[in-house]
Amino acid sequence: MLKLGEHLVTRQMLDEPGQVFFLTLPEIHPTRSPRSAAAARESAWRRQRRLPAPLTVGTPPRLIGDPLARAVREARGGRVIPADAIVGQPASTGRASGPVRVITDVEEFASFRPGDILVAPSTTPAWTPLFATAAAVVTDNGALTAHASIVAREYGIPAVVGTGDATHRLTTGQHVLVDGTAGTVIPSQPGRG
Image (cartoon, rainbow, N blue to C red; front, side, top):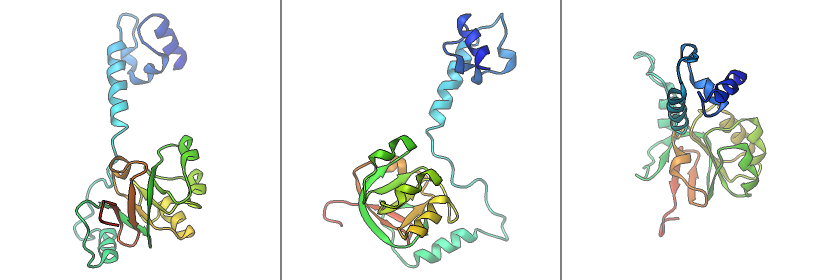
């Protein structure tokens, strides 16, 4: 396909070879110029891939309910959750505070410092070394059996997963309190520790 894309670039039908992946077969025709369709789809794709993924799709059957939601409610007990808290699923118990380090790609690992709160879209085995020095972990995606949850429990650090948008709401350097028992992340504010 890239060879075809290169051919279309030489014929001035595309701006770059990779745009061929944004076209349908009927659009690749010698009498048409698919440049605008490819550019529009590529632009939409770039915009959409920055959006957070939905935490759930659909609703559980009426008779079953959501056992995970019940477990989360029980874990929180009667705690009052501050209005500015980021709420997710409690994945590894305990509390920790420290500076946020938003990491979205393996290339950013070198910027992680001991004691940072790791905030990521999700984690995979490649991320495990960061857990050894992280004060806590917060992810946009995941549940109790996600990689971040399991590894945080193994390392004995608090974790909150499935927040939906922590990587968008928190910034590197910002101080937060992560409560892995309640499933909350509370931004520090002057006068509130």
